[in-house]
Length: 244
Ligand SMILES: [Zn+2]
Image (cartoon, rainbow, N blue to C red):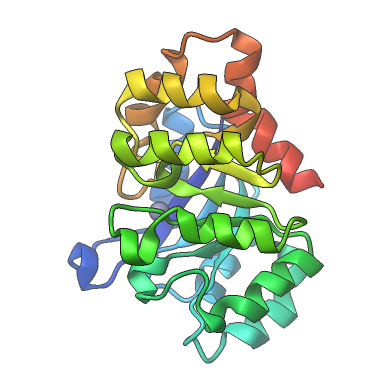
């Protein structure tokens, strides 16, 4: 079964993770050892987009899809996007690191760019509900129906939050919203999410260099769904979104 890890970081973190750093070769080794065929990579929060893109773009021994980190305060961001749009597959928005909701005015032009250039947006969702609650990306999804949003950590990284999020996505019929499995370990509740919203809405990720693919591949393997649905989660859905 083809596996794409749709959420990995490469590079250096800020004090948030004690300046921890990993490099491209380490990532390639871990991905290959884990049986991962290709990966969506984004910088860690203290690595410039252009550094990582330069390192992964011409690699011949492993396929990375580049995910540009959108920090509205990054003075070089607009030029980077302008010069490299054809090499960028997705955008990443991290409300907790930036301490801004995705609905903040400063993200608006980047959401519009994502619509214009058909780039799916992976948005971190977490337990800091005031800033990183799933309700803000859902608000964005309603406002921009043509924008594809992947809500990381299934929308909140905790069963009480992500089950609610799955209900919202289902009840309000958000066609443009997907949930990512990165760093979610409660396999029993992941099953419930997949049953609620359908395997075609769930995307596998590990959050490497923080997590490891082999910590989270078993969560998807353990799901009580047909192999063809597991394939959608492991690679089919993200490939469909990237090829659109
Ligand atoms: Zn992440």
